[in-house]
Image 1 (tube, rainbow, N blue to C red):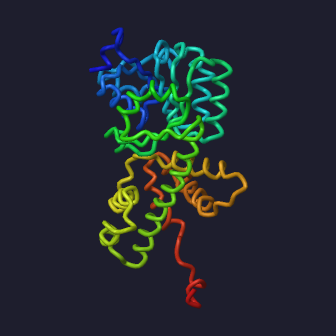
Image 2: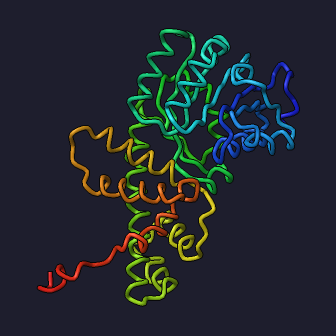
Image 3: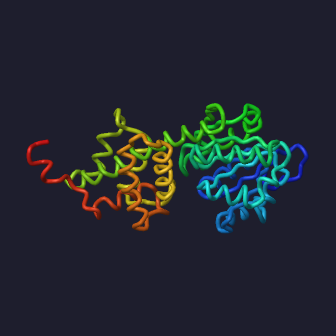
Length: 310
């Protein structure tokens, strides 16, 4: 396997920093494409399955990136990147002329800030802002949509790695544009998922068979793959994390933050609803677990609203 080939002169070397649900899938697909991959994560439990599969697990993030022409970070928050890359010695440890692909969803403001900070401490390192659209299933199957932005030279260097982990890469211009697109895409997705949860709750109130609801929507203009997948997870009571709710809420809040003074009332209400689900202990479950808090919050059509037919 590629993970065992480290050291060959003509072998591409990649470091993956952050091996949670998405990062570990990326590492496996890079390896399957014969790209030697070294991994690191702050949690030993996250790298244990990769170590068992033969991957080289670095003892530190700085060690992982040393000598690697391509570094992928798949960390969940801007604070995590700050801690690992800039406070943890990674920026200084980047190989000369390396390309850093930041692939987590951290927002446009943080993306720009990190790009400028990297330019100050390591002007020789190229920075690509490349968040991904897709959850665990797409990551496992190397079917992620990569929303990339950054210098053109980075595009050439990253092409083999991105081809190994994604179905398509869309380059959107200078660094920061990828994160802006990802925030908009996830806002759309979040509204769909909440809509599915509330439609199922309403169906329950009305005595409608959830399976029949799915059947009525399937194949028609309202049928969206993500909505269909989450409907079936909610219907089955399967909240195994594919996209953890706590990170979905983070993305909703990033969208509200990025909007500034622009009113986004639906996303604002959704943020409060999802925060209640996280507070109820569902943060590490799949985002479909938002279904669980609707009945407990007593969400019902108000009687007064129905009295005059409106």
